[in-house]
Length: 182
Image (cartoon, rainbow, N blue to C red; front, side, top):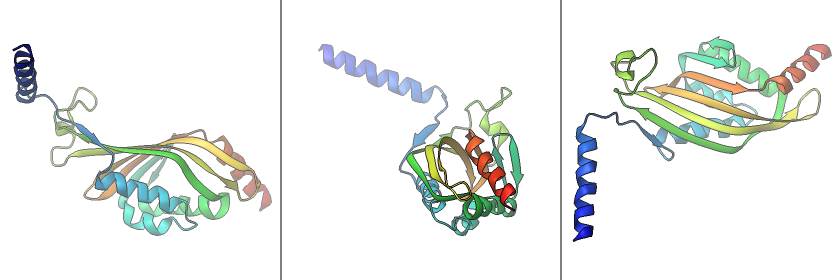
């Protein structure tokens, strides 16, 4: 009898929470968007990642890397090519974790507004990724390794906004060596 009462109480609480108008954001790791982000990281291990990036980013993507803002796919692909062709070889993303957040329209975004108010005509979907970037400096020949966190907002199958956070000191050292070699 006790089990029946507990079961009924659990079911009642479940239905009460689903009917209460709560936000219903959810997270996935094996969905199509997460898999596509994984393909992006896999392609970044290639010498020519820009080929995949052409289909991955929207034309008007906005990329923020720490405090640097890059507007447009064309401009960001130039940066990718420079990193891969002039700065880092044998680039890999190790210990990669990816998950995608599908935000409810009722979820709080910022300034007290909901995502439904911010983007009334589309769902807000952000994918988060954590990894350790490894490689070798093309000029210094030094091993490179740093933790990186990246966020990708997708809309209609393309990345429209990307954020990346990492300590740029090793990359800056490679940039200085490249400039000195010219």
